[in-house]
Length: 111
Length: 113
Image 1 (cartoon, each protein chain N blue to C red):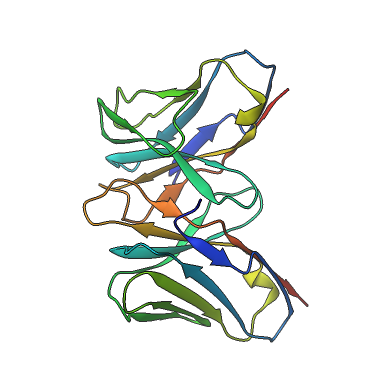
Image 2 (tube, chains in turn red, green):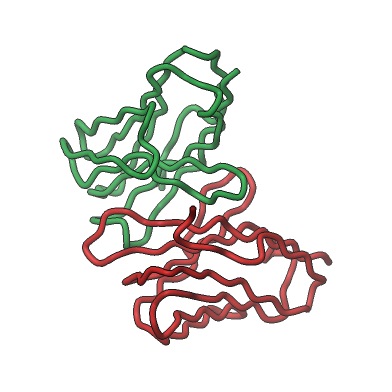
């Protein structure tokens, strides 16, 4: 049983469309990170959110941390083929030494 | 600009064989960790270390050993490989602890026959 559930598991869209990926948990996290992973490579950090209700924007990507710090979402506006990859959320606890990852959402943006 | 270096990139083992996956970082990071990645299951923590001489277990430690004799190196040992250990293994490091930015290596794809 995973502490962090991501949905959907797979998303295929056309270039220019919008998409949202969800990361949900029944546990409270002190921080929530989003990573993107490309084939044959390790994940690369996109953003860290730490405050309940926090919204962060990174160009066309918008990240939100839920008020109760149990869930998060990643929204991509006007997706491009370069956004294709595996998106992973990861939750951390204050002073903890273990990061818990979700199962990942595979995004395919077709030109 | 090496970052986190993992070797080998690919490995095939027979059941019962042992091997060591190497991981080295040149960023003077205190925190290092090993994950395995299986389809649909994201990344699962095997072992981690918060500094030289200090290691601890993650979610799935059985069948794996680690040691941290220097700040730079954090090898992962498979004592007696089993088909269930077929996976992609990632080493990651951060400055001090898990909640900070993790820097990942490019992975080792391991097949156990």
